[in-house]
Length: 619
Image (tube, rainbow, N blue to C red; front, side):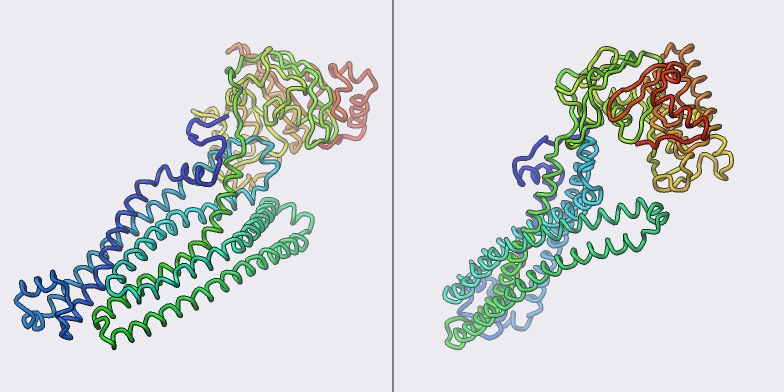
């Protein structure tokens, strides 16, 4: 399903098409940046000539001044007056510099706005795209690597486009205009200066491929390092519980060492690049200074022109060297764009062409459903039918396919055309809008995810327009209210990242309350009571049944409940129970029928009755 606020293509054919889309919100800032760059360059180039004319005026080479300058001197009162009032020329030069400073300020301001706007657009677009990617895509990509692409790579692209690219325009303008002014002073000296430009550019292009490849390896390794850090921060309790701190520390340090080696290699290449670049720049300056001094002594150019030429050359040599930096940065930005292209070209979830709204609660039917994860079979020709308003129980061992079946029902994974059908009220779920389907199916997982915030915020997040009374009612049904009463801050208790301050049972009950405030047509409890004791389990099921019955009477809403559990006591009151083994339905019926069959259900029932609560682990 494509979000309403997404305005991106499903596929980008090139780097430029992606960049062009990212630039939509910042093009006007980039345009103003270019305008002020032109003005800035103009005033920067005027100043050296003004200084040169002043030098020639002072030294006495007035005959070498251009006609309009001579006319200006005469208008001012003649050469003697100007020599006695040199502050006028100083003020002119300062005025030009001040105007240039204002242009520089506006250039920096517009450049910053374009950079930050571009960064925001990229992050918003990427996030919006990622949250609409299918569940299977997230299974195949590490969270740490995704975060690294959306931070480091975004910053790399932003800096290159908003900073280096605008600088390229400025550099080309400065170099070309400087050469024009320099040629007007002396053509031979200008040729000597210009000869070094293709050397620097060619040398930069030579290094372009090597730097790009090295950066790609380093960037990929940084993503792997971020993934390890993210896994350990998320699973810090598991690491501590099993005493694996040393193992994880060594794993991180080894990966960090590989990452460091790659970046040292990249920096070594850049160091070699800049060392030789600086050497070429130094040779160019030495050549121009020496040849210029020789021409000045010979009288070919004036002292003022020599000073102006050195100023122009100084202005030109910096952007010439920076062109080399841009070429190296281009290598890095290109790799980063490719990494974002991978995300943006990953196909998002979409509804079928003639998708309809949720058809209303009705019978749920699996018809010959077969499903595999990467070639490993999980469900094999599963067929069952849940009638509207029934309470269904599903029992099975680890890997039997219980959770997978429910994820297929909620369309977390796509069921292939030749892998059977799943229908609700007679409508194939592939023809139902995913947003509408998921709004009407509530699923509580064995390991619920809670967000940083208060308990009430986490419960309210499941639906819009949820008031405090609805939160309290849902908490009562899920037996969370007893725990909340013991918290000093009650419903305003801060639960921490992933609900770290709550026990496993409290997190599960919070997740149940989340679903109950939505009142979906289909409720799925995927071993969501595994962390609570048997007494609390019974209280929750009793309160839930009473709530469903009351809702049926008042709103004529026949809620279908699907219970997945390893506890027989959780399932025994269900209208029908299905037993899964190795992806196949091997038994079905109500509790009494299954106990009398002396099959897997009966064996587990006897084991739990004789040995107390136990049984099979949940997948």
